[in-house]
Amino acid sequence: MIETNSIPFNFSYFALNLLGKQMYTNKWTAISELIANGLDAGATNVKLYIESIDKENSILEILDNGSGMSYEDLSTKYALIGRNRRISNEEFSEKTKGRKGIGKLATLFLSKKYYIVSKKGGTETAWMLDSTNASDSDIPELIRVDINDVSIENRSVWDSFESGTLIKSVGVNLAGFAEGKLDSLKMNLANYYLLNNIGAVIEVAYKTKAKQKIEFSKVSKVIGFKNLYAFFQTSEGIVENKLLNDSVKINADLEQVSNKLRKVKN
Image (cartoon, rainbow, N blue to C red; front, side, top):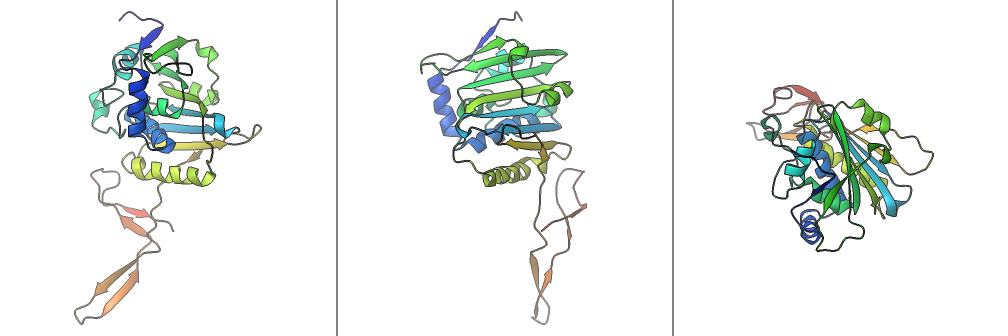
């Protein structure tokens, strides 16, 4: 395939924005979709970074160490609306987690300008989509940019990945966002994705001050069984109640968790 410096989409901005608003009710569902796409690409580590010093102009970075996207992947898969996976490799298709399956709509829903940096097969490329001054009838396109011109907040993390994809959204309006919502997002990420992705790690960092150090924390699934009681009726008609044990067996198709005792927390 002959490579060019731009990759057009097959829908107008009007159509893409309309679809995005129908699919995503809020920014957190869109962020969850992008994290799911990283897992779909076979990532064992997905990191979400939120820089919200100016909440109305926040920065998001989502980094994964999955398979990455080549020029061909971007032009024949990513830029085409109608595909339900970022990649079509059978190895990943059976465990697709992206609920909507159209990650670019999630990115456009979050902001008018974003970057895609991807590593695959030893090649690293960077692309930008900027719809700041676009009209509804314009056709979106990814524009190739110099990798050195992309200011990556988590450069050391990205450099440590041999393959993968980094999405950076700028000018994201997170007005009204509170840390409590971040905790809720972490819980949702764990509930939706981690049980069936035992080998994967999702990490989140939230920065609100200029001199604040970036620290990622793992998202973990917590099952609150210790405060639950089981009620039993005996043959004599007496009802008994017992506090559940501090471990539980989880029925699952996955060998890693099936019929194995797991410690639970309050």
